[in-house]
Length: 484
Image 1 (cartoon, rainbow, N blue to C red):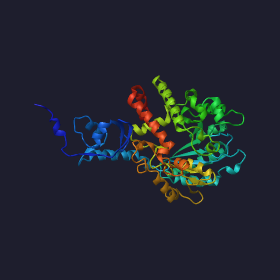
Image 2 (image 1 turned 45 degrees about the vertical axis):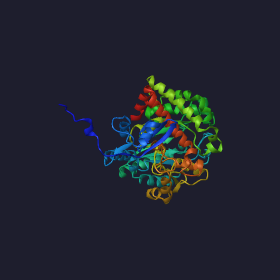
Image 3 (image 1 turned 90 degrees about the horizontal axis):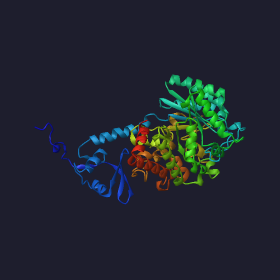
Image 4 (image 1 turned 30 degrees about the vertical axis):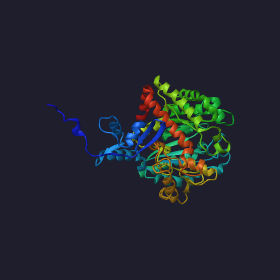
């Protein structure tokens, strides 16, 4: 006598129904299909037609693939809807902790003169471009009003170390006030490290302050991209990285590179430079359309196709390093993998919908003006105040985040209902960047087929999918990144 009931016993007689899904035709005979939370499945033309027409049944293979991918359900069943709702709620969990990042622009002064700089920097002897202590204290009060239990305060510039005494006062005041507000604090200084000294290092050690710097590659490339008097920006950056690692620890300094036209043929050398200084990964970051990058025409010198080729070569090189036993990350790929392979909420503001403007970060300019994002602050330096929310003199956290301006901008950033995005197979993973689209197209929503941001996202995701599906050894590395 059989211990199990026959297979037919487990089949519901209820009619099959489609669940919401998105798709893109990848070639004349194949489709990329994604469900509400971005799980991908590839179908040929016949399978896609059968799915849309519900010409599938248990045992034919397509039924099982569609059901496990949450593309179909049975009429009256709630389990599929409940699973999707639970996963979507988890992915949107960042909304429970609004505005965890607060950026203090303590000065616009800088001793570098980078042609791609996103900021309208000022010369080192113009102290009127420094944030005052009064402005800093008012900004700190707003920051601590954020509901987020853990707050990161990041010091930006210009070169923030040119106003280091103010950084000291902000850190000390924040720690004193946060203890009563039961908030955890993290501190980061975004610096070129040229002005780093023992006193600064000791303060950072005593107060758990991390440092973030720029490293564009080998000495000749870095010095070309980031000129300063003495032509020694690379030497000072490398010296600073080593000092931070020695005094604070290997994990207390990170570096960012910016891809310029001079970088394109040198991705392997750039990656080797990071490895040689004990850094555990790299963010192959394209130029952004702000500040001096526009004024010096750096942004117009290459299109997204050239950057994608650069990215693919770099990722290939990094994966080969990992396959040979050297653990090293490409951080943007890592973030997207976490988005694609898990339902954990992502802190990176560019991969959020609604966008991270205001809800992900607030920026306090040296003059007291408050912006919804750092890029919005950069646009204001170019004369466009679209993303300016108020002034620390009369603002509160609630008045800034609840302002009609920010509510409208956030509403425009919802990819779930934006034209072109709402039906796009990649929507769950792209996020929204209303500042970028406003800067490049004059509209926060943007025309996505004309958007380099959109092309970049699709290009990177397609590259990852190809590796996951067709290269088992690469897929093993990428899946490990996705759960790290």
